Image (cartoon, rainbow, N blue to C red; front, side, top):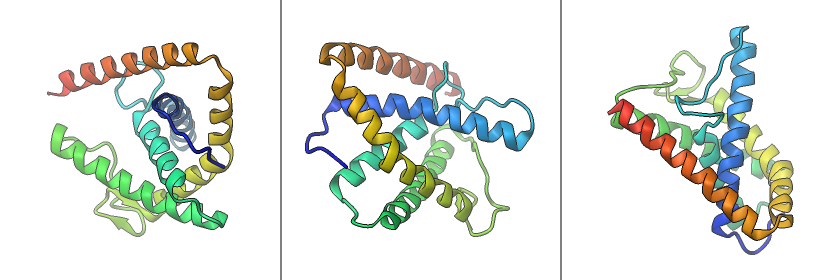
Length: 173
């Protein structure tokens, strides 16, 4: 499932691709739930949601180190880590920017409205699908592209996201 070496370019690639995939998935989910087109890009420029990029990197690092033998273990680890990550992101957002992007206090088995059983199950599904299907595809594709093109593309992508984060941080401060 995982190769021995996980370099910074692969991690950066996973972050960028995960941010884009997360934007698409959350936009589709919110569009279905709200019954109209709803973009959820965390206030950033472009089709990215960095929470998902960070989560995909977190899942990659976690499963690179701990290699579960059974697939249900992937689901459980991803659900717990995803729920904890969502909780931490909510706390940090409120501490830094004095805002909250979600409130699950009406959901069954919620934890201070910052995460809930339902969303932990979603994180488990996301992690399971990512680790078993998406990561191997991303990893294989990144390894087949000429290294200098991968590095250049990832650096440009990272700079765009960094500029976006700076712009977002300045607006909220």
